[in-house]
Image 1 (tube, rainbow, N blue to C red):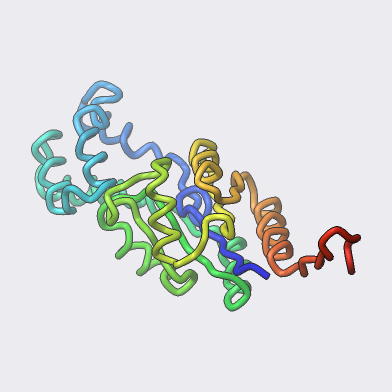
Image 2: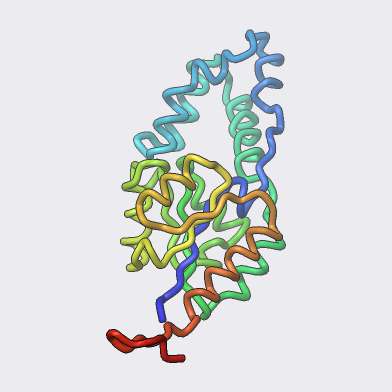
Length: 217
């Protein structure tokens, strides 16, 4: 019998995070050409995703690069977090709660500085799984194979015992390349069925073999 492990992404899996159009609204408000906000903030977004800057730095850079005053920065960041945090995938979260004690549960997420505090406050993911590995805390993003190694090390599990669930194809393929099993999230029904199959395979007895002889049931 193996020790089954399920590791999940957050955005697009445990959270639904559709585009709210907040960046375009700010460009219209500031009378900037389409694409200006992300062009000016690109390296800030990148730095925040690997934790090389803090939240205060993000606010200061937004103010300097976009010409925002203090109340505008507050509103800008509030809009950012509204889209980032989305809404919880209640059905999948409830299913995972029912797995406590049956398997190991973890999270591996490409993230942004400040995510842990907000997601803990809103969704209590720290109570849902054993370990949460955020890119902004380890300085590595998926699909870098080191990110998958980091979550396995943090949980003390073997990649081959893990099923990784993500909504991005390249991340799923990268997980498989590290030896994990992996599932592309498209909807709850198929994902729940795939997790159930993974757990069933982990507890299914391995039939003994007599060297040189037939299978013995």
